[in-house]
Image (cartoon, rainbow, N blue to C red; front, side):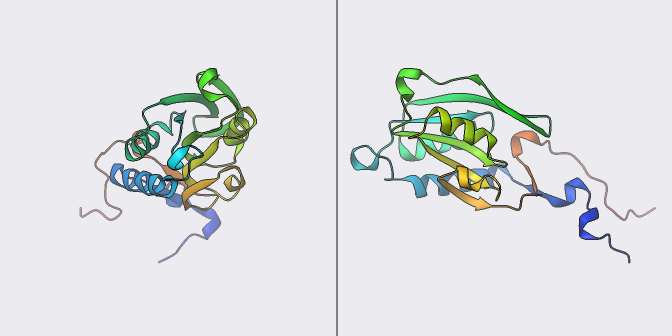
Length: 173
C-alpha cells in the first residue's frame, strides 16, 4: 500500500466536517464561556450581532442561551466561493445600537485570516468578538473561541453540505 506525502493531500482530506449537532454543542459551549462576561449589570450583554452568514446559526443559539433579545447582523464579504478577498461591509447593524461596540457581542462561526474581524474591530473597538472556531492566523483578532484548528484545515459547516450517497473506496464487482 502506498501513501501520499502529507503535503500532497486532496482538499477534502484536510477537512473538518461539522454536523448540526456539533455546531449546536460548540455554540452552547461558547455561550457558557461568555455567560456573565458582559459589561452590563450582572455580566449581561446589550445585544448580539451575527456576522453573516456563518455567524447566524451560532448567534441564534447563543442569544437563546444567554437570553439576549436584541439581535442584529453585519454582513461582511471576505470570501468569493472558497477564495479569500479583501473584507467589505455589505450591510451594517443599527448605528444607534452599536455606538463604539460597548456591550455588544459579535459572533461568527470562524476566524480564519482575521480580515473580517479586523474590519469589524476597527468599526466597533469596544465590542467583544467571539467565534466558535479559530485558526492560528486569525486568533489574535478574537477575544473568545471554543476550538482551534490548523491554518490549512478547511471547515465544512452543515449549512454548506448536503447528505448524499458516497461510493466506497473499494467496491465489490
